[in-house]
Image (cartoon, rainbow, N blue to C red; front, side):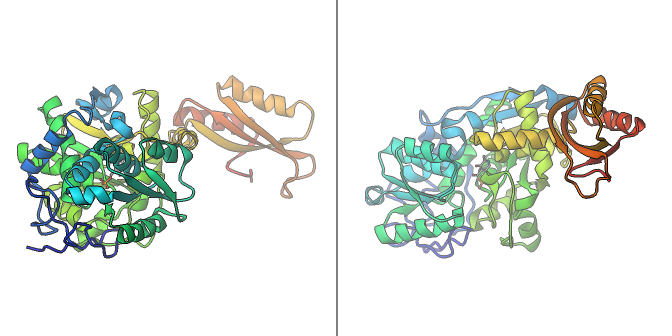
Length: 447
Ligand SMILES: Cc1ncc(COP(=O)(O)O)c(C=O)c1O
């Protein structure tokens, strides 16, 4: 068995575990899965570890509700439920793993405090967990981290250090801090205690919906889906566990193909909570052995899901928390009902929410941006707008442009944003305008 733990995840190149002995060693009396002292980094977490984690979390985390989803049940022709972890304390499931991990530190480690780096949910989970345990926490966040997230993390009592332009740069600073001060670095996913803590989500799901056949959850580094798979497969081996990544940050599919964690050369997605460039060693071992499938969804799929959850479900969910629903809506995965989709987080910056709603409306064909050429004569703009109104398009924005060099003399261009009732309605509106002789184009200019 390995006693020296070397994390090679996206966040650390080489890092000591931070315990007194220079490697991760459980405190005497700790239960199974307490640290990775006597575990190989690829030893899988077991059901007993998840059950022990649940005992630790009693009275600390919420048993979040499981809500039926009518639109999804209708779309999939079978019951679909939503596991509302966006209603968890600190707005995501992250506090489960963070609390289990931190509560198992030795007295000496607790005295040195903990350190993490994150722009979002992990920061808040660590800050809350450390605060509840009376342990000092330092969280490194990028300089441009959204103010509400900085304020929330600070509000849970963590010391905030704004360093670097990206989370990766904050992570370098956090690692330096850990080495300098002896604070224990809390990894966001690649640790047995973190995986066991996240697995408690599945214990609740199996109690709330014992007949569940498929569980769908978002995947960044893989901690959540690993924990879910450990518990679900041990209790009900017939349950399918499906992980979902954003296509713009999907390190698991190439890693699973290669048989080892593979780093993405670049990645970007609106689902910032799951924007991770490489799976962890431990999470990769779990996902490759226990998870049935990992699928990807597009940015449009995610925006549409977020909009549906907001509009139909009255649920405020962040993009990373909505990827499971996105996969179901987009039909990129075959599932057997009853299905449970995990809404894993709700910490969304209001400004991002505005952008995503607009994107979701556009993706659903309900927000049409078009440019129309018309004659530059009095009354022409009113005529165009009245035609749109006649076809029940709701104009939300109008820009009247004369400066385009491609316009003929006596022509103007009108850029419009129009709210419609969906793709079919948009098509009808465009056809009607064209039938009236207008040159219509999507985007900046009409040809
Ligand atoms: C909202 C949300 N969902 C899902 C995840 C998945 O994370 P992981 O696979 O690393 O456990 C994260 C990670 O932070 C998250 O913030």
